[in-house]
Image 1 (cartoon, rainbow, N blue to C red):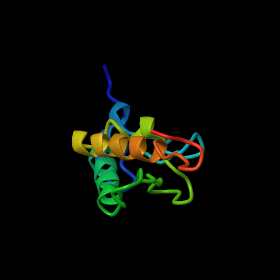
Image 2: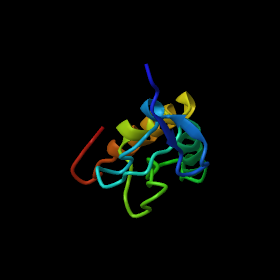
Image 3: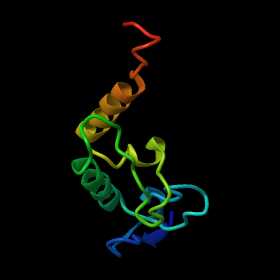
Length: 102
């Protein structure tokens, strides 16, 4: 069985194409990235985030586009995924004080 190889568009290391992350922000995003580079990118974005709101995970190649959670969650540390989930729950739980009661 032959393994198809690819090159990470960030670190330029060769990797098994089956393990590469692609289509990070959509089908037009054709760059390939290794899990280590994607995890580092997500960690960097998360570290600079405001603790009270979910982090906007921007694509490393198309900075005006956002990566969906399903594209980056497998490359991120469990603590970052848990923090993002916690921040999203907090953001989504905001309610208008004039018309809602808890």
